[in-house]
Structures are given as structure tokens and as C-alpha cells.
Amino acid sequence: MKSGKRYKFETLAVHAGHAVDPATGAVTEPIHLSTTFERDADGGYSKGFLYSRNHNPNRNGLEAALVALEGGAAAAAFSSGLAAVTAIFQGLVPGDHVIAPSDIYHGTANVLKHLFGKWKVTASFIDMTDLDVVRKTVTPSTRIIWIETPSNPLLQCVDIAALAEIAHANGARAIADNTFASPVLQQPLALGCDMVMHATTKYLGGRSDVLGGAVVSRLDDEAFAQVRMAQLYGGAVPSPFDCWLVMRSLPTLPYRMQAHCANAKKVAEFLQAHDKVSAVHYPGLEGNRFHALAKKQMCGFGGMLSFEVRGGKDAAMALAAHVDIFTRATSLGGVESLIEHRASIEGPESKTPQGLLRVSVGLENGDDLIDDLASALTHA
Ligand SMILES: *Cc1c(COP(=O)(O)O)cnc(C)c1O
Image (tube, rainbow, N blue to C red):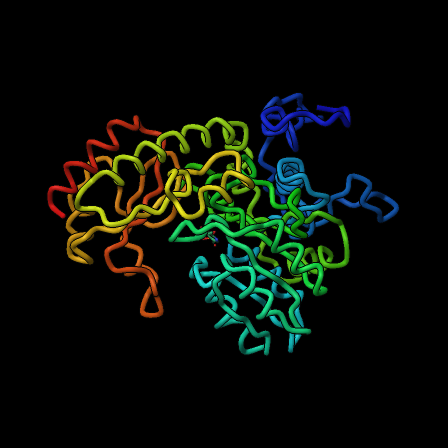
């Protein structure tokens, strides 16, 4: 893909950031393990590479691909999703304030509370599904409104465009953790966000075999320069092999997401009709509180859902103990279906209901998944 033409998503997923290797003609990129690169006779670096913490051909390719898929201007890749989160908050200074959702990925909450609290960056964790609560929480020191939608683990949706407007009216930036939706289902930059963050560990990697993170920025501006500085000086960069693994998964991303969505909808509908299940959290269900909003800002409802069993913790644990196809494990976004008792992984600060199980619906046959849950539910 050499022209600057704006191709559609599936085409970008195959070609953006990929190139035939100029040295050998290899169609698939080599993995460039070299940590250091030769200088020119005059001391310059005419090939653009110096040292692999600064730049690496595999990382450059991944960053270019993510820019294309999220519709941004610049991207920085990291060694984990939380390294990307940390790099964003490292652009703040003591006294700055962050607004974040109360239903937030617990790791992001830990970064704000336990790493940045010490540095006098304050955070308010609030119900962001209510925009008035957000407006009332903004202070003159608010610098970032952190958005996570659909959220983890309750699959709540918040209005991205409205939150970006509130942020901008108050001199703050709107930054979205787009991990659950992936750029296939939702594009926060087009809805007004300033940056998007990803755990590439999840749907982008897609195989539960690589940890990674990324920040994509709408503008290549001063705020993004801060993220780039955290990447270079902080050094939490992904390895060339990690970048290569994520790149290998990107071409199938749009097709995987379609199948994740179709399977999740089937599973959600099955669970909703089951008498041992008291609640199903999936924005794709007609009766879901967030259905209309999700429809407005997403073009598919995703592969993640959670549900609550009437018997509480013991029933949830008994169900999880009797699955055959599902694997009892944390994380999400891989080809295999996972089931997880969320409260016990989140630790003592968790507010997640004890009877809640979170499911990452994989790419197995949807009817097999339903049969598996149906038989496990007999133990709940
Ligand atoms: C997994 C995850 C992260 C953190 O990513 P790591 O690669 O585990 O550091 C952040 N946000 C969400 C929504 C996640 O699911």
C-alpha cells in the first residue's frame, strides 16, 4: 500500500504499517531484533533508526497500523496496556485532577490511586453514565476525563461525544480506553476524543499470547509529545516480537470482531432467558439500559458480557467449576472463551457483585458455548 488513498477498514487492517521488506522482498516482515543501528560515515542516521528504545522497524509498523485503524495522527506502542495508561498520566503535574468512571478497569484505578496519588494527582471515580454528575465533578484543575465504554465488568456505556464536549468546554482532554470495543466497533477519535488507549493484549493481539498497549492521538501535538517522552525516557516499550505478534493479528480483526459479536449476542440471549440468572449485562440486548446509546456510537456490541446468578458467590463458583469449553481465566479478546469470577480477582476494594461472572465470548461455535453454559448452570 504505497498511495495515500484512504482505504476502508478491512484493507487498512491488512496493509497499514505492513510493507514488503526492501532488503529481501519478504512478504511478511522480518522481526528486527537488533537493539542498535549503524551510523552513517558522517555520524548521521539516514535510515531513521538509532537504538531500539527510540525506534524499531516492527514497532514503527505497529504504530502506523494503529494510527490508520483508529483514524489518528500519531501512536505510541507500549509493553502493556497499563504502561500506556501510565504514560498518559505521566503528562500530568501535581495538582491536576482526573475524572474517571466508578466502573473502571481495576488496573487503571490502581495506577491513579497508588502510583499517581503519591504525586498529588487527584482522581474522582464517579457514575459517568449521568452527565450531570460529570459536570458537577469538573474543577478548574480537571485535565483528563477518562472514558471506558463499554466498561469493565458491568458493560456500562457512556456517551463519548457528550463527554468530549464537557471536557473541551472545561479545558480538559477526553481520553478513551477502547479495549473492549476495538477500533472495529467504535472510533472515539471521530466522536471527539483527544486520545485512545488500548490494551493490545486483548482483541488486537487476539490470541492471548502477547501483552501490549498503545496510545493513539487525534493530533500530533504537545500532549502526544508527553506520551512519546514517557515512552522514550520511561522505556516501557514492547519487544519487536511482541509488535510482530500484534501485527500478525490485525488483518483478521474485523472478521474476528463480527464473530465475537454474533456469538456474544446468542449467549446473552440464552442467559437472559435462564431462570437461575438474575441479570445479564450486554449492551446488545434490546432491553439493556445502554442499548440505544451503544447503537448510536458503536457498530456492533462486542464479545464481552457479564451475568449474575441468583445463588451468589457459591453458585457462581460452582458454575465456573463445571464448564467444559470455557476456560476459567482472566483477560479477554482471544479466540477461546473465558469465564471469570470477577470480584475475587479484583481484590478487597472490588465493588463487583459476588454472583457475577464475566465472559469473554470466543470464536467457538455459539451453540456449543450455550450447551456448555446450560450444563454448567445445572450446578449453580
Ligand atoms: C486488560 C486491560 C487493560 C490493561 O492492559 P494490560 O495489558 O493487562 O496492562 C486496560 N484496560 C482494559 C479495559 C483492559 O481490559
